[in-house]
Image (tube, rainbow, N blue to C red):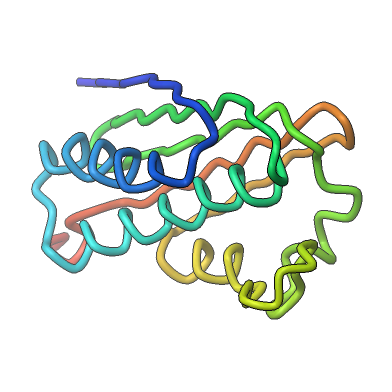
Length: 143
């Protein structure tokens, strides 16, 4: 049976923890390991942080998170209507950061790719960015 949630919240950094917890709580209805749950929550943290820090870059906006479960697969989509990404391939390179903030490591997309099975990024400058990630859980129990 398919199940889903859709939430939106202001692009405030304090909402990253809320989104992480909400995605984790939603994912917990699956037969999920602690490691899989940690992977999902980490990837969500990176996607939400990217939307807030890079998508809106200091201005207020709205971040939307959608989570969908179908079978043993969870799909998480994070949408912002911020600045957009001019060069997605460049932005996905490890250590690249579109921010002047020297504390940013430029590893957000790399982390998402590492912890999820798939990562798809769509973006248009001045329109926003949509990040969709999927993970199949419980695969270690397959025959």
